[in-house]
Length: 131
Image (cartoon, rainbow, N blue to C red):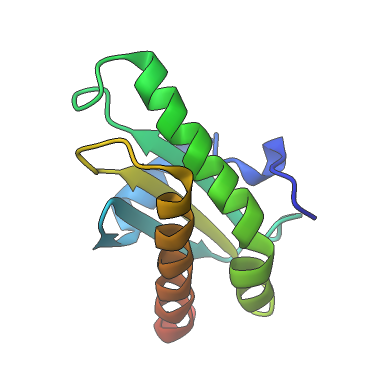
């Protein structure tokens, strides 16, 4: 199931506001992760939004390149590292991945860092005990 469908993306303005007002966050360079487990049933256990700052990267080409690399690394790792641990709890997790790095890295770097992010995220969510 290495897909990244529309249902896995966090598009709802209401849920985005809820995530940034009530969510927890941590920094694992070059990512700032915000997350919020909520009691809702959904087809997928995680909805994610990926953000790259326009202030830091003026050119849309650079922002899109970074977002594509993050999205691909997430798509390849989500099933094994994230879904298997979170889907047991029966909650929906709202997730924001913000890129705060100062340079454009290659794909292997994003892959390694996102693996660490997912491990830390699973630990934080399981440690919250249902928010």
